[in-house]
Image 1 (tube, helix red, strand yellow):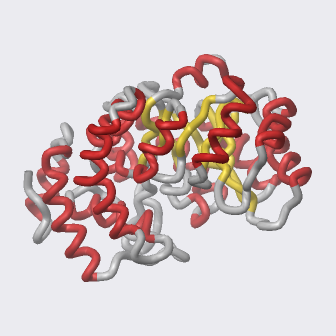
Image 2: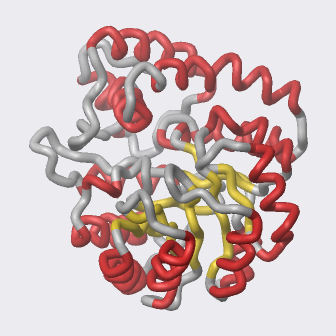
Length: 322
């Protein structure tokens, strides 16, 4: 696909696969292959390999490229793969080159490590990553990477391969101003979490990134469908029943957004493994609450066609058998 075709395809839901680890914290490529194969059977607009939910910042450059390669192979051309890049300009460029060789379709640039970079330095950081490969670029505005409407417009002008903007600030008022100022030059994505879906679609995003896609693609897609249709009554029901209870558990500890999703996957018999430092795994009391919530999720869960979910559900003590 051309960059323009890819930009137009970015509509609905981005699946955000976790990066599975074994108990010794080594990469579990077999689990990653199974998970991506299953996720690729759903109509996501793309999958993001080694993004924030994929614990990019706990991976080495070589591991990131390996995760992208396995994700591309497992997706098998059924769905575009977006590769996470970041750290600094040199490492980001190295990842970009490796991701392109691994078959990725697009890059997702997370903020650089340094938190106090001036606007001009941030621009060079993104330009360096974009110039390292021929892949289209999406910028993820999160944490300290905060931009004005004018700054976003300047980046769009200086980086021809920039096709999309992912918001991770959660400031709907400011994001709407950015979208209005820059217009349809970029695809606008909601990126702070499933819990912000109503606000994002209310201001006109065309897609959002979902960590819930790891356990309930049916729910992620229903949220996007309701959002794109501006069916806020339907959205309110889905949020109250499924999303808000999950995010209430995720809010109990900093960094829990990945640990809780991995634990939910394990409860359901889906290989995920532990998180790597600096994240921490779920506490026993939170695991029990999460187990009860997964029972509520029954009607938006699916049996995996490979059969391994059912096998692991039966083998794991206390796991839900559906």
